[in-house]
Amino acid sequence: MTAVVSSDELVAYMSGIVLPPAALSIVDTVLSGNQGDLETYLGGPILDDTPIVAERAYVTAAQYDNPVDYRPRLLTQIWPVAAVTAVSDSAGNPVTYEFTRDGKIRLTVDVIDGSGYFVSYTPGLPPGPLDQAKLAIMRVSSREMQNKHDDTRSTAGLDGRQPDPLPEGWQAAELKRFSRWRRRGVFSRPRPYGPEAGPAYGPGTVGPGVYSTGGYGEAGDARAATY
Image (cartoon, rainbow, N blue to C red):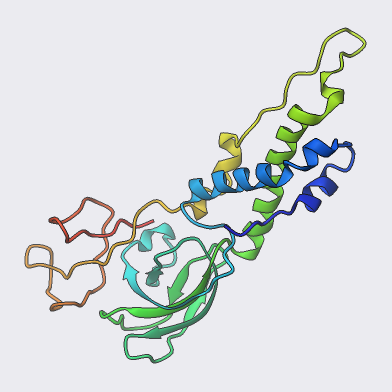
């Protein structure tokens, strides 16, 4: 896991609060844990410094995520995707594509290559959502640091009452902001169409519409759920 927020950044974010030395020694652990919780929710990394080169990818039938844009979309093994550097067809020829602001790879082709494509990309959140994730991690982490290490929160006010503790951990509304980048399925190499499902594409090849959101095939022949 690549850290997206440093301890110095969180301390600067909380500059109005003086943290004791013991608290500073645990900042990295708090940041790492809260980032890990968000990545678990997303089902993929927020930031990954290791690029993926020429990964085999296939067209998914999930065109209905955008009712006004029915261009074929490539399904990568790791999601979300921060950047794309190249897309080529099964023969190695470059393919024109659009990498959308929400991290989808949409092909601008007239004919789909049923044998799949090769994609080179960097896993993680796109730049805009990445900044939002960094700020959210600092907000969640600062609440925990204040509850545990801010002495002023344990001091009673003039009315003799202590302030209520701040909520710890990710709240449902905070996670919901990142739901569009959440992986909602698993990747598995699709099987060819069978006679009962549609036209056959031959052994080892696939065609449009192979991916399905429902169920699995026979053992060892699973279809991939879309996300």
